[in-house]
Every structure is written in C-alpha cells, then in structure tokens.
Image 1 (cartoon, helix red, strand yellow):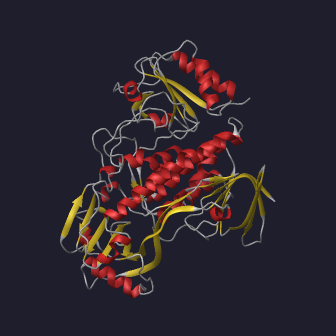
Image 2: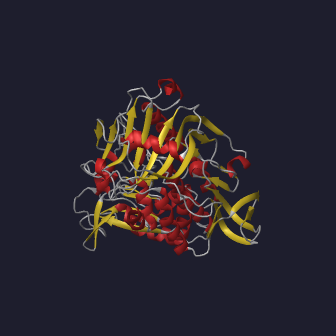
Length: 540
C-alpha cells in the first residue's frame, strides 16, 4: 500500500496547483489523473491577476507567462458581425491593463489550458518527482477517523493508497462529490456550446486589433473566436440554445460555421478537435465531508463568461493548502480545516452567480432561446472589468480575528475594488524596498505568516518572532518605513493598511489579513499569541 499525507484526485490546474503548494509547504502528496496526459483542448485561457499572484508565490509565474501569450496581443474585446465584417463594439478590459495605481505587482496572463497544464505539471514533478500519476483512475475510496483508503487503477493493476486527507479536484464530472453524498444546487443547463480547436490563418483580420476574444453576433449565429497564439491556432466557441442537438456539428459543419463567422467563404480551416458541453451554474452544498475536500469545478461549476472557473478553483487550492500543511505539520488544530468551507463556499456561490449574470447579459440562457441569436445584447458593462471579483474576496471565519471595522461600501462590488487591510480581505499591494530593490508586499509573505508593523513597531516584530518560535508557526516579521526593516519609498504602507506608525497587521500564507492592531499595546507578545490561538494555531 502506498502511504502519503494527501491524495489529490485530478491533475488539471487545480490539482496540479495544490500539489505545487503542498510541496512548497513541505508536505508530500500524490496526484492521480484518469486521463493519459494534460488537456488537449484550450478550455480556460484567462489567468487573472490574483491567480498570477498565487503562481508567483509558488514560483511558477515565469513558466506560465512563457507558455502564454504576451499581454500586448490581447488588448481589446471585439464584437463584430464577422471578422471581416462590420465591427459592432470595441472595449478595453479594465482588468487586463495598467490603470492608475495597479492593485497588484503582477498582470494577468492569457494562457490556454492546454499550454498551462504542461507548465504546471513540469514544475509539480520537479518539486515532487514520481508523485504525479496520469492514466491512473480512482475507482473506490473509504474514509475512517484517521484517513482515507483509496483504490486506483493504472497500467500495472489496482494499487491502494492510504492518505490522511484527500482532495477531489476532479472537475465538473466529479465522481468523488456524489460518492460523498454532497448535492449540487443551481441551474444544470444554462446553454449549450461546441468547443472547437482549429487551425486557420486569421492574422489579416486581427493583427491591427489584438483581442482576447472576438464575439461574432448576427441573426441566427452567436460564436466566439478565442485567441491562442493570435495567428493560426484558435479556439472557436459556438453558442446554442439549451435544447439544441450536438449531432449536426461534424468537423465539416463546424468548418462552415467558422467560415461564416469569419466572413471569408474561401478560408482554409483545419478542425483539430470538437468538444460539445453544457454550461451550468451549480454550487456544492458543502465543500468537505470528513477528511475529503472538494475544490474547483467539483465544488462550483459556472458558465465560462468572464473566465472565473479556473481562477476560482486555483484560489480554492490556495486557501486549503496552507491549512492542510498547518494541521499535518502540527502547528494548527484540525478545526482550522473547517474554515475552508466557511470561507470558500460563499465566495464560490457569489462568483458563480456573477458568471451566470454575465451569460444572461450576453443573451445566453433559456430565456433567450427563442430569440435565436437576434437579441441585441452584447454584455453588461462589468464584463472583463471585474476587479471586485478578482480581488474582493473577504472572509469571515474563526481563522479571521475581526477588528470591528466595516467593509468598504461599493456601488458595484463586481467592478469596483477598494484595497483594505480589514481582517479577512486580501492584503493590499504596496511597493516597498529591500536592500535597494523594489519589492511587493505579497513577495514578503513567502509560504508562511507575515507580520508587518509600522516603522515604530519594533516591539510587534520582536514579539512575532518570539511567538513564532514558541508556537512553531512559521512567520516572518518586518517593520515598514524610513527607519524600518523594509523601506516605504512612496510613504503609502501605513495608510494602505490602516495603522499608525506603531501598529501591526498579520497576513496569512494565502495573502489574506488575519488580524490587525491599529497602534501599539503594552504586551504585544500576548496579543499576537492570543490571535494565533484564536485561529486554532500553535502547538500545545
């Protein structure tokens, strides 16, 4: 029997990211994926800024960017009657471009899933050789008070794996979730689509208006050209009514639809693959059962409008991995794991609802079926400008110590994002300086907790280091400012984090603020330890 602390079912972006994160935390895992290799179809392509922050923390950001397309090749969103025909609307996505004070040290990346997965797999295998098993299918599992026993099938037989915890990142067709008896709630069929992977030279019609997507809209036809390399390799999405049949969509018919959408009857088109699928908006009733957790599409299946599915799944992994590591390495109590569901399920529900609202605004869904594509709807203004969805996750759970402040009031929580260090929120991005080099706040978090104090917050820093040693919780600590350990050349940090020069903020390994004290106190070590204990952290 193979024994491992964590078994990960599913070798897509969520499963591979979980493996990478656990390896970086020093926790061994094993990934089993029933498919023989990584994705063939492009599927998801937009890697938003928050997810790129996760990849940066993992150490895989550069590899993902190298596998993707330069940002300059995806400047616009284009609506047109055909690629060669009349342009209806052109937008510059706010989430994809530099605007004022950028909310992150990193920018988004357009990297098709069939290019992303090999990059993640290579890095995961480099961190943990021999632990990523493709062509290996989970056939059965049972759990007890101390762990999970799983049976898998591979080319050599049916070995068993014993793990302390199991994570199901096995997608929308998850076999683990129903086996756990966890129901889904929501809409099972929003609309139908045909995903087409194709080769066609479209450079003539796109080179002067580089876009992430070209949405073709005309009576009786709604489809989208999805940029992959921006020249001759494309995804092509054909949107259908929810009751339409997939049967007519042979390679020959799909090629004709491509030519119609391009407005070029003589266009040479090579169909490389066809993948029919049904868009749904479903969220699991709970994200865990005993020692098994579900993440990504297994936990929340959402329409692709906006490109939130992969990103939300990777951020699930980011939330869960450090908590598993903390429990397995003995510096947190098992109750900490309950906060995964408490924090991620409400957020997954909200993002799913917003993806569905995007779809409806674009004329996709049962209420639009009778229009046969005649509806003039393009997309609501928030489409591809969803900074609130990208950065706005704010948690309320026992792993967050509230400080009595209120969340920022937003007129439009989908499109707007106001950085705040209110406990539960993502820690604001501020450019700092270390050893003469520009450094982002999130780069200083590393793979543990990080305490940031004002330039007169030396007692907080020293207390954090002492508490880290006594409780066994990995934690770095810095004072920030002209006289601090870390420079603040723009003088923005204290205001961005809502503290005085002798205040402090504690940030979790997933980049969310855990605790904040606006100014100094008489016994900082007691306050830091109290906060840690309240979050179920610390040995003893």
